[in-house]
Every structure is written in structure tokens, then in C-alpha cells.
Image (cartoon, rainbow, N blue to C red):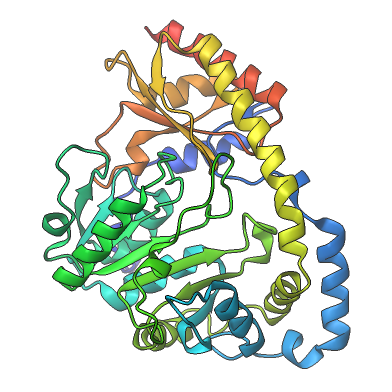
Length: 394
């Protein structure tokens, strides 16, 4: 029998952790603290249902046929107006619609990465970004933004781009302060590296006022042509199943990304684009936001209270002021969080170990806990199960 051609080498450079916690969904009575999932009871189901029926009837050409590669001009104009500021005025030429935020990451890799190119990445880094760029076999320069003496210019020198999640980073939950945002912008200008601002959690501020985006901060009042590549999504404001995201960037970058998108999926769903456009235009997203914030704030507080009760002698963490995650570090570094994840499944709880957020896959000292998906009662029980697992391993 003729031997078949081999699979691409990059497929061997993965781990089985993701497959393990995806399969864990089949375990009865499992409490899933591992994912980054919005709560279904936060979705404006009735409004989205009504919008979907209406836009098909009223806009059949836009919703049911092929769409322009960069996205429907109607939605691009709405997003340009929504994100424009006096400092960073935008037009539709600054906006590309993507099939979810994940496609934006994939397209950035396609247009900026040759095999072995360097990425300066906020560390720990979002697993989905690492997976999106894995086929390009990049090298990484980890950026520990909280480290004393961190030098963004040194970190970004020689990099194609710097990847950041400044609002409640996935996985660490860290909020990057304004002064450091400005330092990253200055370093991008000095080094020539692009600065990727991935912002799925930018609306999820539970304490205090929202900080200005780096997109806004790097403008100079003229039509936007700066180094920041901004990624947004409806997944946390409306519903992830719509699979609508966007990239806001300099027109030259938008053109390059559109070329890459044409060879990827050609266009994003016109139906979902029009639903998103109407949801923004008619205030559905803005009306839903206060309820989402109240729901998630209460769940964050419940998780952190349970951690204080059951885990304070086992782990250290900081209570995040927004987002979807708590990042906790083991006090006993002899306990691998890869092993903890697998042991936890036997106790009916699933967490995300730090190794999947490390480009080198080496860090096994920490874990990410999601608080948005589960009720306060389930969060408390999940933490109790996690603490019992750790004590058994100690």
C-alpha cells in the first residue's frame, strides 16, 4: 500500500491539555472552571431573535448572499463611529469584519509572520493566540509587564508585533495601567513593531472607570494611521455564536488583512453582520451591558470569597477589577497544575493549567479560573472540590 503524505510538522508541537478539558464536558456533574465562556443567561435572546427575523425580511440581499470581503459597509461605518474619538477619527477604511475575534488573530499571523519570526507577547499569553500562530512556528519574547524594570523597547526590538490584552488579560486578569500603555505605544513607534491590542473584555469593568484604549491613545487627531491593531468582538457583549469580530487598524494593514481573509473564508456571515449592526444601532448591546456587569460582578465576588475560605493557605491571587478570570499561583511549587487538572477531573472540577498559556509549555505553577459561566453556588462547590484535590496531592 502506498504510504500517504505526512501531516504538517507543526501538529506535533501541541499539548493534550486542551483536548482533555474539552472532552471533560462529558463528565456528569462536572463543574467547569476552565473555559472562558460567557453565561447563557446574559445573552439578549429575545432581542437577537427578533433582529434576526427582521433583518432577513428587510435586508435579504445583504444577509443571504455573498458579502464584501472587508465586511458590510453598514456595519463597518457603525463600528468606525462607535470607536472614533477626537484623537483617533476612523472611517470604514480602518475596519475589517472577521469571523469572531479568533480569525483576527489568525489573519494577523498570516500577514505579519514568516516562519520563525519573533513575537513579543504579554506573558502569560492567551492560548487561542498561541494556537492561531503555531503553524507559523514563531519565536517568542515574553513580556512580563508587571516585572520591575520591564523595558518595552528592548522587548519589542526585532519583533514583528507585540501582542497584548491590556483590559483584564486572558489568562492573568491583569489591567495594564495608562502609563504603561503609553510606554508600549512609544516602543512600537521607536522599534517599528506593530502593537496588537486584543480587547474582548473591554466592556467588563466591574470596579472603577474604563481606561482609554491604546488605539485611542496613539492617535494624533488626523485620520487614523497608527501602529496599534485593535481587535474587538460581540462575543462578550451579545453572544459568541454570532461569530462577529472586527479589526481596527491603519488602512494599509486593513487592505493586507482583507487579502488574507479572502483566502481564508472569503467573507463573514452577512446575516450575523446585520444582526450585530442593528444590535449596536438600536442600543441592544448598551441596554444589555448593565445586567451583564451585575451578573458577572456577583459571580466574581462569590468565587473570590470561596477562594478566601478554601484556598488561601494553598494559593495566592489578586481579585481582578473586571474581565472573566482569576489567575492563581500554587504556594507548593512541587504540585504541577497539569497534574492538578487531571486529578481534578476525578473530583468533578476542571481548571486551566498555566502550561497552555506559556509559549514554551513549561510553566506548571499556576492556573486560570473562570467565574462568568457558573452560578455562585457552583463556583463555591467547584472551589471546594479544587481545594480537596490539592490537599490530596500535597
